[in-house]
Image (cartoon, rainbow, N blue to C red; front, side, top):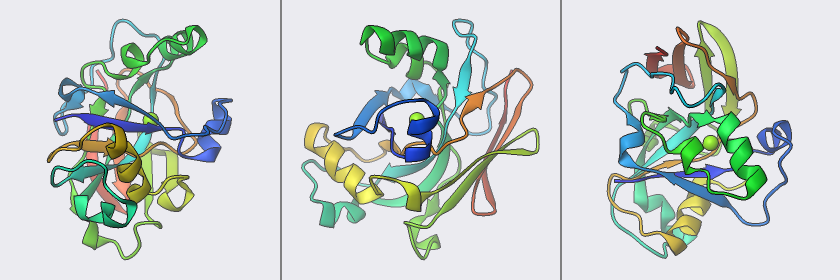
Length: 203
Ligand code: MG
């Protein structure tokens, strides 16, 4: 099982980090060991002083495929959830400056909390799903899948040109604006519409 993460998929987030709009989709991966078991605490890693949250819709791949055409991509997932793409922003900034890979900032243990999955049939329109993050009861991030540059089907089609998808793989679909630092003792609650699918503490 692997976790594939799309970068720079929401224009307002690209702007807040002063990145450029990519000519081609950006993706990177996290290993299975990045998964945080549901509702377990997240332990602040000792190697970073600036871990950021990024709240993202997550797709679960339901059968194997490669070179998936966009028109068939919807058949490759039936469940969605929310997750946090934890990022050691201080390390990522250094890696970007040097043109080095991002794994050290993105793929570390527990860097991918994921919530309970819902059937995608729960939603009338996958391109109009609202999701949000509260920290300590305060709304911190708010997104709508209608603002994605690449929609779910386009993501699956693009990624599967390079990397075969397998049953159980997860795809993080990018974060909207509002990313920010976390602190020890923060309490995370992550929602799709008004359904809380994930909660955990930072320790
Ligand atoms: Mg992200």
